[in-house]
Image (cartoon, rainbow, N blue to C red; front, side, top):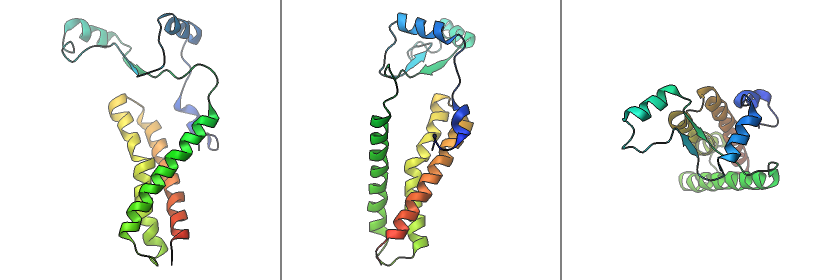
Length: 162
C-alpha cells in the first residue's frame, strides 16, 4: 500500500541536522532492541521535580532503532505475507464456525471483513493513544486496514463453498 499510494509520504520526516543526531546516537551506544523512551524514568520517579522539569523542557519521545543497512524488503515481505495468512486463518476459523456452506456472498463479506479489519486496522489506534503517533497517520493506517479487509472479505466471499 505504501509503495502504490502516495498518501503515506508525509508519515515521516527528516531529523533536523540528521548527521549530527545519528552520530550522537551511535556514539552513545544506542542500538536495536526495545524502544527507547526519553527522558527515561521509573514510575517512582515520575512525579519528582527533576523528571517533571525534563519533561517540560522536552523533547519527550519514543525511539525505535532498526537494524543498520538497507531495508531487508524480502524478509519484510515474507513477514507481511505470514501476517496476512494469520489474519486469514482467524477469519476462516471464525467464519467457518458462524457461516454454513451456501451462505450469501454479502454475509460472508460482512463477517470476514469485520474480522480482517480488526486484524489489519484496529490495533493501530493504540499507537496514537500510548505512543504519541499522529492521529492523521493512524487514520491512514486504518484506511489501509479497511482496504486489506475489503480485499480479504471479497476473496472469502468469492471462494465460499456453495
